[in-house]
Length: 111
Length: 111
Image 1 (tube, helix red, strand yellow):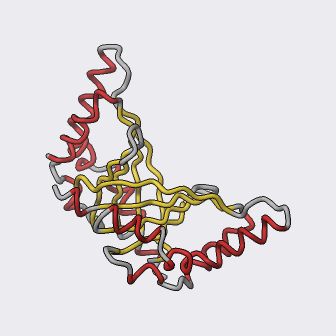
Image 2: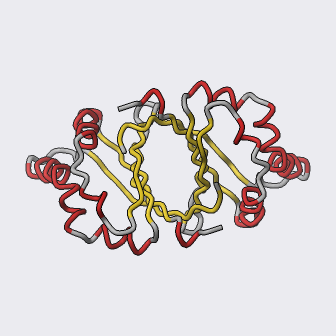
Image 3: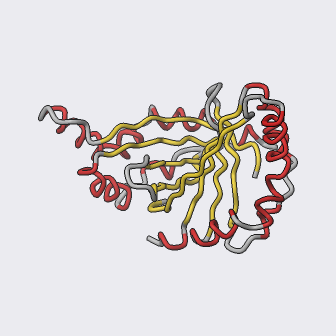
């Protein structure tokens, strides 16, 4: 077991039906700002086969510290700037936010 | 994008507090019955850092058909037999089930 080197963060994202295509486009054309971060290993964006399910953005890191450093880095803002702009626009227009997201964090304990 | 070759199944598992150590032991000593299945790529068992969170068993397959074939195979019963025995014992004794689990399935749409 190497739990100290097997850290996973999952961002659970719920999109409105209207926003799904845009959401997928953002990832299909992502800037890759995260890819050069220290300790970043790789990521997967998982699309639920069940309609209305949450999308999962699963990222693998060498340590929780590396993950936390990313969330407060310029690369985090850069990587999310189009989504943040969409959210700000909806807020200004008094509309429902197009998505909600929350991170959960894990250790890999078995393979 | 290669969504046809990037299938992920996640088993979300909630354990009772009493069962957590046993649950982790089952995976630490798993039989590996799944490893030889056609289309199986790899798996991760994710332990939530937040107390009381769900465990995730994430398995990667070449296709949904390969995953479905596993769920109805002898290897599925073999791989879960100790857990199924624990569940049956609790049921016989009129106790709360030590865990609850449910599968959700996904396509990888971006990396």
